[in-house]
Image 1 (cartoon, rainbow over the protein chains, first blue to last red):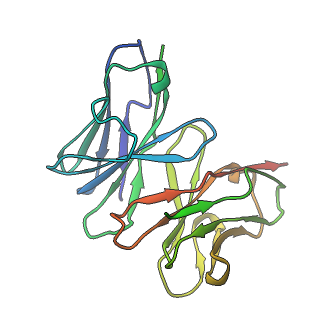
Image 2: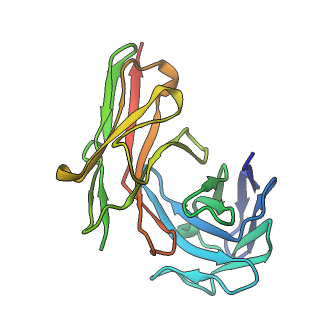
Image 3: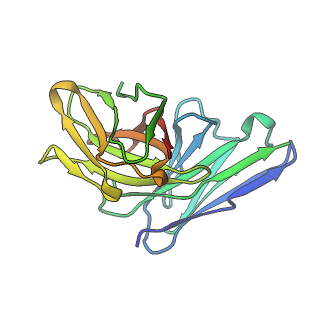
Length: 116
Length: 114
């Protein structure tokens, strides 16, 4: 149980376009989802926390208008990178937490975004 | 602010040898502690976690970790490493009442020599 599906696994887009990444909890309802960014050979940096039905909470330094997060249902959160630039190229990972499980996180398999 | 330190960026061990990956945290109270493993291009898999109780925690894949309050450490160990253990290992901490956020260490890249 507790499977999180992240799609796409890889995406290449042109500079100036937008890209949407989906994070789905397949067999549980996730009240909270987290979005991380990971640069090569580095750790995961939390970008934002999204709670179902409310606005996402962004970490300091993360541009809200560039990284749009939507958590419209208990099984789906999306991250949209708007007007992408090469510096947005990175590995993005989501994680989901089931209700009543304080630190019961399940991570998606990540999305490799390359902006050319 | 809380922090997590993994002093070893890279570690190389021979298959069959024992392994210890170090993790130290900085926080006034005892946080929740986790070890995750990440294979290349993949998400993270939870190896084990410590919330309270017995300070020696058993995890999956033969891993264990020991919480030492006096040293603010939570080192990961495995008595005999397999080639398939080669991956990136992350230590993470979470705080009670901290919005359930995790703070990750910088990771240790494990290479296993055959």
